[in-house]
Length: 329
Image 1: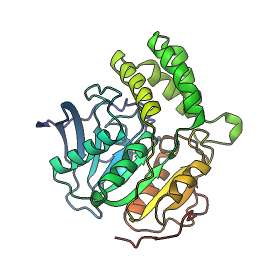
Image 2 (image 1 turned 135 degrees about the vertical axis):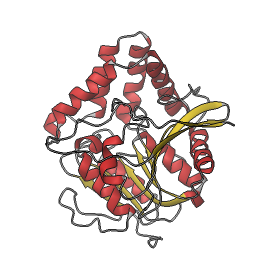
Image 3 (image 1 turned 90 degrees about the vertical axis):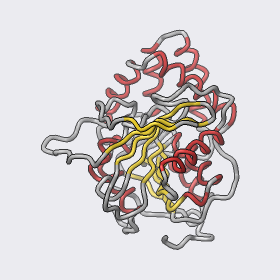
């Protein structure tokens, strides 16, 4: 295993499912000290990004994004989250700018890579956020390494592969493999975004254009990894019924999420002791992009033990499984 510290870098926000440009009139504050670590786990190189906070109000926040996101995809959330704590993002093996990972390596391997990273950078416990595929890795990480978890927040998540995804994977993989990027991009946008008639979604058209553009600009390496990712999930599945640590937990999704639907979110929350569940109004699967400030506020509130009840942008908070509800830590 090798570790290298890389000079801090702050490239353009071009990661898939990244952020829209800041709203007019808003100025992004200067970020904290940023470093990158080049690590190796099981013979595969990967990179994490750390935004340090010298006066944190809570434990470091580990952000695990979706399969098409990378370690830069959360930069626009930093204006709300970085003042509270150290932020950690990562391109795990097989994703982003890290080494290609064959599909024979399963979710356990990725979960253990997360623990390897935290051990290497000297972070004993984290507040964990996992969105979409990040929840799959995050939940397995929490199950395998419960002592590393302080709080859990999952967004746009489920404990089983959505039927829409299972049906789309063979078509998308074949389309990508034959190089028809335009058709694949259109299919991916339809998969991740709700139909306009489902309900009003903030910035729906703008986000659809953003995704279309980003999918169209995937590199051959991106495509190779995306096909392998689909194979990994279909082959190994996304959930094991293992114990989940009894820590404060929250699950949320967009109220019009048609991929990982609200009932799927409730199902996930019900497997977690005392987990809260809510939906964010006027959003779908891409809730953290469409309602960037609100999703950051929700994560920040929960990780600093502030109330999440009666928020104007959320539906009423539910407790799908009240048994063994954890105390705040």
